[in-house]
Amino acid sequence: MLPPPDLEVVIVSHGAEELLRRCLRSLELHPPSCAMRVTVVDSGSPDATADMVEREFPWALLVRAANIGFSAANNVVLRHNEAAAVLLLNPDTEVYAGTLDTALARLYSDQRIGMVGCKLVTETGELDHACKRSFPTPLGALAHFTGIGRAKGASGSLSQYRATHLGDDEAGEVDAVNGAFMLCRAEAIATAGLLDEGYWLYMEDLDWCARFWRAGWKVFYEPAGVALHVKGGSSGKRRRPRQEIAFHRGMGRFYRRFDAPRHSPLLNAAVYLGIAAKLAISLTITAAQDR
Figure 1 (cartoon, rainbow, N blue to C red):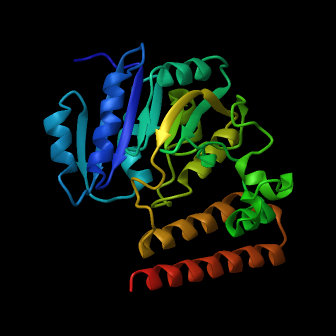
Figure 2 (cartoon, rainbow, N blue to C red; figure 1 turned 90 degrees about the vertical axis):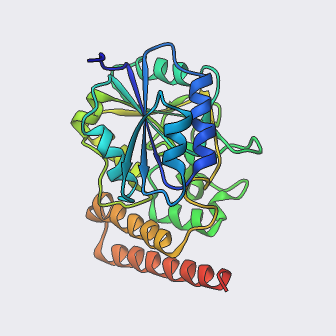
């Protein structure tokens, strides 16, 4: 029986064959200095993704599963993890030389750090602003989704969702990092719990970060480690109706669990109405684009 690795990398993939190939090659080219095991959970891919992994990357463990959702698919591995650290990595990412060692060094630099996210960049070299986030306030969320909070020069209260208090190249604590790259201490997972399977897709990363903080663990952004993120590559550049519904249900679930108890019934009703209105608009746009 092989000894447990120092780092377990979990990649959940659904029909992202070429992107997953590039992701696995990057891990092959730029492994950490410690013992690493990579597990790919093929979540009901409609193409030959699983066969490709089996054929081209025999060193990776392959788990074939139904399309059970991002949280549940990751939990298949997390539930039986024996490694000291676990990296949840999207198939639409690529790590560079030193990315994993830099993130691991940050994770172990402070025994209170439970999760580390790296700097994610797009194919054009721009920052993927979702790599560091603050928990959204009702105003911050409204500003973000209307675009006002993403505009240059937006005030802190409007742009807060992007954790603008911290520079893009400044290491520091943040409320949340992106689910595309989440390096976690196994001890922290044991106390915070597994990913919430009530989220089928989207918002589960924000929820997990909130639970890490509640369990007494820090979430840290480390820009010295960089990874490519093909934004929307694993879920599609444009969300389908089921994905839109899952995204907005996730928004409502997160707000209900972490924010609603602190706010008035009137504000809560306004937030839920806003989420429903945004969903209706998104579904209308999606239907029009499909014509």
